[in-house]
Image (cartoon, rainbow, N blue to C red; front, side, top):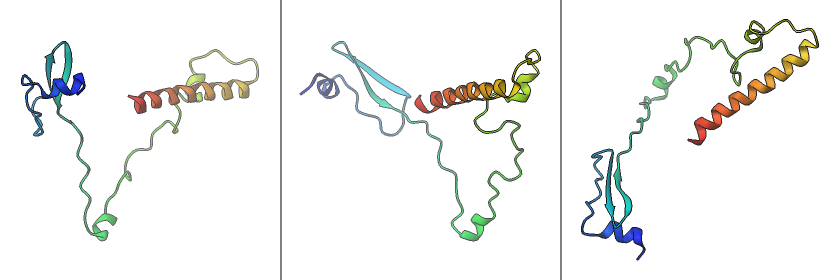
Length: 116
């Protein structure tokens, strides 16, 4: 029996609360921090009508305002142009580089959201 299993089966440990008690119950036993139970705070799924006719009446995203920023863009080039001095060189090259750099920012944000 491993040390972690022994910590779970010791007489000092409280029984696991499966009804959703406190957010985290912990026990320090023999210098080992053991999490006994954790409450899950998940958003329940949306209620979907059972009949196909009722599902057809759902509006979804219709009626919502269209975002002013295209997907995958953090700061559009048109807005960036307002904050920088006039471009004396190749404006197309500057725009392409900005869109690539801006795309990396969007990718970084999504990686943070998905990874953690």
